[in-house]
Amino acid sequence: MTKGTRRSGPPGIVDVAARAGVSIATVSRAFARPEMVRVGTRARIEAAARDLGYLRPGAGQGGANRFSGTVGLIVPTIDNAIFAEMVEAFGARLRDHDRTMIIAAHGYDLSLETGIIRSLLERRIDGVALIGFAHERVPLTMLERRGVPTLAIWNHHPASALPCIGADNRRAAALVTGHLIERGHEDIAFLFPSTRENDRARDRIEGAMGAMAAAGFGVPEARRLECPYDMATAKALARRLLAGNAPSAVVCGNDVIAHGVVFAALAMGLRVPEELSVVGIGDLRGSAELEPGLTTVRLPARRIGRLAADAVVAMSETGAPPDPYRRLVDVRLTVRASTAAPRA
Image 1: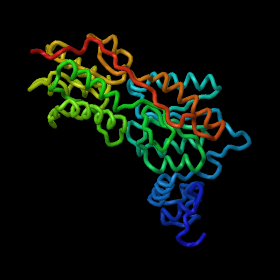
Image 2: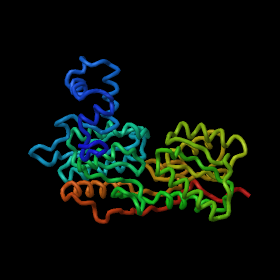
Image 3: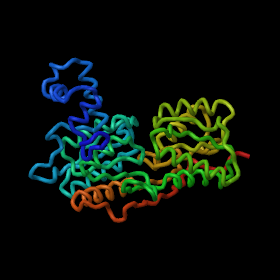
Image 4: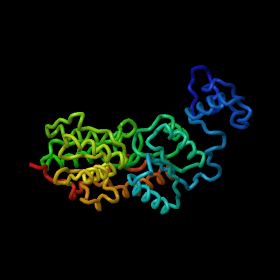
């Protein structure tokens, strides 16, 4: 390999050595006999291997059997009901294909995906499903170089680089925001999570702001609050929002946040929907049973899970992307008792 020529294929021990600034022998020793290598040097080598997506020789090799019978699913969280129905449907459908699932969560920290994917590759997964399109380069490169079928789910974009099966999150947020506008609301607050590593949240806030702009309404910064998908945090933020110059309605980035807002209003003696209308996105378990029942947009989580499992298995068996390459699953506005016209 001449100087300046880029090495093709998965990164090897030579690449790790060059990246860490040590000899090939030192890298080999660090993996085989780590106790013989200084702690600082080991740390540099491990960081280089992680950044490059390097797998030790033998890890992730298929052997005589092409399939392991295992599919990876990486989600941002398993701490609440956001992805529960999808995960359940994904796993059940894989069983129909005589496959099993390994599920991992990165807690909305995309830097952890490289380690997760390395671990999955060492288990010779047949394919992997990722949530959304926001991912760091290294883990995607690891999957691509090893020919592992990769599918993005939960979000949809007509020009996505990865095959995808998901909903139009802009439309979902526009539907609930438009519903409030049709009811006569103008002073609306928005509680959404950070969009930095969450393309679904970014699309939703863009959809909500687009609906407001189309109706000729501006949204002051004070009416846009950043809130994680956490009920307790949402409740605390909502109490502060409602204690002052309260809006007539609140659009929430998902149902978990919406539940927190409803609980905050009830704790403060505000009647929902007579004094405050609240909408969510997702139609999670418990939203219909909430008092009052939550107006929200139904994301077809189970259908996404089943379709995703079928697609990953088909990709692993044929080596081709699913047909259609990008599949849009429609969303539906579900109107319940948490919304009404604003007080005169």
